[in-house]
Picture (spheres, rainbow, N blue to C red):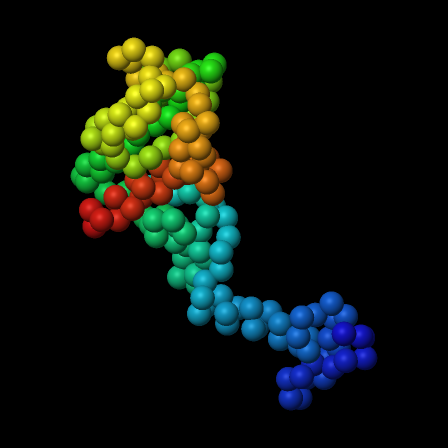
Length: 184
């Protein structure tokens, strides 16, 4: 839009900025943005990480912030009487040219105890899922251990699990926050 364009709001007549997306002056654009924010909320970075899931993504409403992942209201205390939810995961760790397939309900603790180069992926599941993966990749297994040779088949499985996931810990945080939400 060029500088000679005037605001479409009756009685305003202020100039519209050349890069304005609509024929509204700055003041009326702000009013429209505030109105949309009240109706739809505004996605933004939380002032501090969510106490439940650790996410930094939030939705800002006139009444306050909500975590965009678990919907915890920012600033509210976490109910310390609630036991933390159990979230079982199957983890895939790389150490040199091997992959460990294991399971844990407390992966942070468990992974600190295992020497590894990289966390490749998480899969939601317990020992039964872990057992199925051990059977599925039995040809790549080193003896009776939980360590497997890297093959195209195993790499493809891990790639499918991590498709669209930048950081496996973000996925675990989402599963944990969902479990908190189910607890009520």
